[in-house]
Length: 200
Length: 308
Image (cartoon, rainbow over all chains, first blue to last red; front, side, top):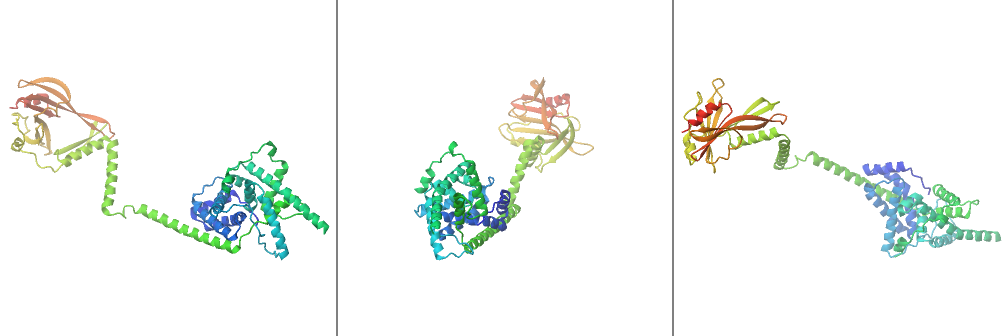
């Protein structure tokens, strides 16, 4: 999943086309740009694929209904608006199900084309994900949120800042601190792996 | 509860120690690059680089069938919305275009009348000659006067005179007029040569005013014009105004000459005055006003003194 960098002018033109003419072509382009990212971000917070699909559908439905009233406030404002809708739906979901948002909930590797892992690989990957999940969930809620938006939602720091109503430098600082904390644990794990490999 | 806790969590302020170092900025650049290019593990990379690449590689992917199904459903909704919008616009257009025609006739007529009334009111408010004209026309409609002469002035001179006649019934005879008032109508014994037509109008009310119009038929045009008016009334309120010029005696009773000024407006809305002379006196509880635009004072005095 390659994240396309969207030219803000082009994005604004697409939004205007949809607002004025309900242009399906422009909407398809926007959908293509954001679908995978919204899905990844919601799946990051939810344990089930089924519930994720429900929330992704609800997100895009709300976007479709609310787009006429959407007001462009510069580059990044559309992505921030879209992911705010997704984030609110995730929060509502956890509130409704009395479930606690545990942050990283992945237990399986994503489907990768032309990749047919062996049963052993699958077990290893599951262990790997569980460890990574454990590491991420040890971070502060804000750091977990920003990492989710950055790596799964594919948002720029500026877009995250608009969403969370924070300064862009504060986002950068949270991200760096979170990654550094993860690196300590991840670095140790890598060193152990290398040790194991050399013994073999 | 967890959500509330998250919201309440205090932001850690960025102090000097936490300012982004060059390494941090480099890391953020690499992260952005990784996200946009999706590069994977690299043996030459640092553990932080590998961690980021690892995070990106485990991004959950949606089922393609779901993606297409959702896209189709959204496009369908958008097309419906497009149709609805078109219908709404068409409906609005039709509403505006056929605003009058789609209503019952009486409503359409009412709307047109209201619009005309508003326009007329606006015109009368800003253009005095229009107001004067309207008042004259109303007088004709109500039958207050037989004939209205509308004078249009331009630069202080008479430009045009328009005569508007009403279908009012003929003026009363002396007997008819006398039957409607409680006092005895007195007539002048003297009339200047050629003026013999006498019409009577009665305005009932507290003052019981009788107006005696002395007309003359023009020899050349055969048109009747008002020569002079003699008002007799129990009250003196109607013709008491005006500029007092001189005092005289009418059969031993004090009388005054007064200027009677009527104000008219020319096309540009400038006021202009039309002067008449009136002789005003009281005799035996009856108030007399003799008013004329054209008679000389001596002729008017002769007429007044001949009233028995």
